[in-house]
Structure formats: C-alpha cells, structure tokens
Image 1: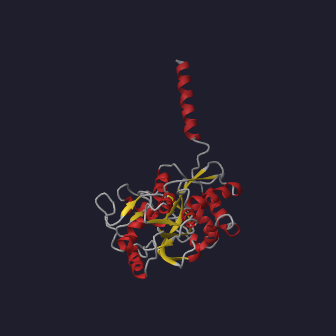
Image 2 (image 1 turned 30 degrees about the horizontal axis):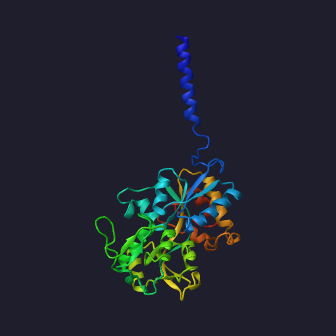
Image 3 (image 1 turned 45 degrees about the vertical axis):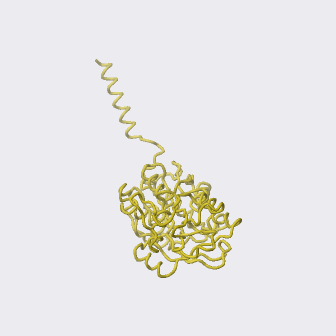
Length: 336
C-alpha cells in the first residue's frame, strides 16, 4: 500500500511540474527574452514585394535586433490571416482592407467568421493596384470587358481588389460561384501572371503590391508594359463604397512607361499574434523604423517608411509592444 501511495504521489508531482513549467520556449506575451522563439513571418509570393521586403526585414532583425525572424512565402493576405489564426505563423503581411474584413468578420470573412487573434505591428507603405497589360489597345478599365484577365490567386486580397475596381466600372458581375461573368478571369500569382502576359496567354493582370514590383519589372525587360489608369470619376465612386483605398500615382519611370499612371492603393500592414511578447514586438518595431533611412540600399521600400504612416491604422488595435514604441516617438495608437 505504501508503495502504491508513493507511486501516486510521484505521478501527481510530475504532472504538476509539467503543467507549471509548460514549454520553456513558448512566448506568453508578457515580456522576457526576445530571442527565445523563432518568429515565422508569412509574406506573399516570391515575385512580390511582400516576400522581397519581408525577407530583408527578417534578416536584419535576426542579425541586429536580437529577434529571430524567418520570412516565409505564402498565398498572400487572406492566407496569412489564417496562418496567424492557426498558429502557423507569428507575423504576417496583410492588406489593410483584408485586415479589417478579417477582424470584423465581414466581406471575404463573412462565411468563415472573424479572426481577432492578431494586432497591428505597423503600417509600412502603400500598395498600388497595378492593372498590367502588354496590349496597347487596352487604355481603360472598361476595355477589359470580354478580355482574359488574371485577378490574383483565389480568395487573395488581389481578387477582391479586382472585384471592387471592375464593379466600379460596371464589369465586376459575379455568378453564384463567385466567378466573373464579363471578363474571362484566370487566377494566378504575380509571377504566373507575368509569364502569361509575356507569352500572350492573357490580356491583362491585376497586381497589388508596392511598385516597382519584381514580376512587373522583369516583364518590362522583355515587353513594352503599360499600366491602366483609373479616371477621377470612377475613383470617387470606388472611394465612396470602399474607404480603405486611397488615390495614388505611379511615376512613368517606374517601368519605363509613356506617362504617369493614376490608380488606388491600400496599406501594407504587418500583423502580429497577440501572444508574441511585448519585448519582441518593440524590438522589431525599433529595428524597422530606427534603421529605415540607412537601409534604403537593401530595399527601396525602406524609403517609404515613416512614423506617422506606421502609426496610422485605426481599424484594428496595435500590439502593446508596438504601442510602447510609437508612444516613445510621440504617437498614440489604439490598443486592445
């Protein structure tokens, strides 16, 4: 009997210690070492700005800020949100419109439901909606009717940007399965879209990323590339129904075009899971913003980073670590 009681007592103590100890590498969000856990940073396709810039951010933070970050390619904004929800990543790039839809469970997240396990780390730059074509006869969005057009990967942020813009021009109608009825849509990544344009397999492609975008720049080395402008009337219509967009201009020299292109854009935002430590998020924020001016030669997007833009998001609260950083710089951001 004594032996039995001793075994029971030992088992209880072992279980108690295991429950109290947990995973020594688990980051519970209340501070501590910034280097105890690798932070997986889901970005986008390998030919897009998310992946290129995200890789530079991850490498610099790992080598200089004591935060172990690894950049991973992905299918883009919506997929990144689900990766955060499923604890397959700690950080993720996301378009500001998709971020808001996820947090509120609306639009593209109406069926799957809201995802609110994340907060904002910072907004970094504007992502321009680029309607790319090599067909000189396509001069306006209206000219896309009946044409073969890549609208991004299925359920990506690009797809829903295409829906918004085509709808503003009256050619964004969808059938019961969510397929376009007034264009011949294909669903391709940036790189695949560029290849299809190069080979004459499609007439145009929606690409939503910071310009210059690698896939488009590469295409411009072999083909004459044109971007389709949006006119003021339809931009106003779009902004009225979708306030997440802002009007912006892509300079002609970006891809060697004949003139500047007027379009709309959304913000590229870094999201972070709420259970990532305040120390790690603070360190990553500091590494990005404090060093931006000196890192432009490593990636051009560093030149677009500013504190006021970084602290400009209002649709989703900021992580406590980010809020601490921005507060030290004189900016108050919403928190949970």
